[in-house]
Length: 234
Image (cartoon, rainbow, N blue to C red; front, top):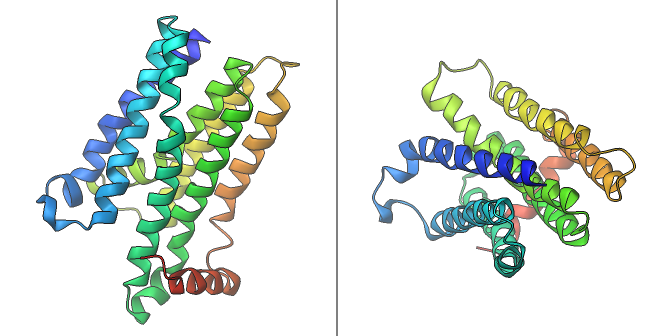
C-alpha cells in the first residue's frame, strides 16, 4: 500500500507540473478576467482534487490513517464539484458556438463528457471498495489518470511539432492512460477481494477510450451533442 501511495504522490506532483505547462499559454498567463467563471471554477476544483490526492497519498505513506480518513471527507465535496464543473464548462463552450463551429467541433464533446463519466465511476468505486486499501488506491489513481489527456495533449500541442491530425494526440494520451490502467491491474495480487471489480472497471475505462475513435463522428453522437447543447444549463 505504501508503494502505490508513493507512486500516486509522485504521479500527482508530475501531473501538477505538467498542468502548469499545459495551461500556461491560454489560461495561466492571461489576466484573471480573460477567462469565464466556468473555467475558473473548473480549474479551482481540479487543483483542489490534485492537492487532495497528494495529501492523502502522503498521509498513507506516513501511516497517518486517521488523518487520511478525516481529509477524505473533502472528497465528497470535491469529486461531485469536479464532475459538475466539467459538465457546465463543456455546456458553456458548446452552447456559445455558432452553427458552423458546432458542426465542426461537436465530436470533441466526447472528451469532457466521457472523462466526467469515468471520473464519477472511479470515485464511486473507490468509495464502495474502501477495503482492501490497495484496490481503493487504484480507483483513486484512475481519477488522476483521466487528467492525462487534457494535460499531456496540450503539452504535446504547445511544445512539440504539430501532429497531422487531432486524433493522433489521443493515440498518445489514451495509449498512456490504457497502459497505466493495465499496470494498476497487473500489479494487483490474483485472488484479492476487489480485483474483479477493478478488472471490470479497467475494461470499461479502456473501452470508453477506444470509443473516441469510432463514436464521435456518427449521427447518433451529433444528435446527443445537439441535445446537450440545447439544455438550459449555462
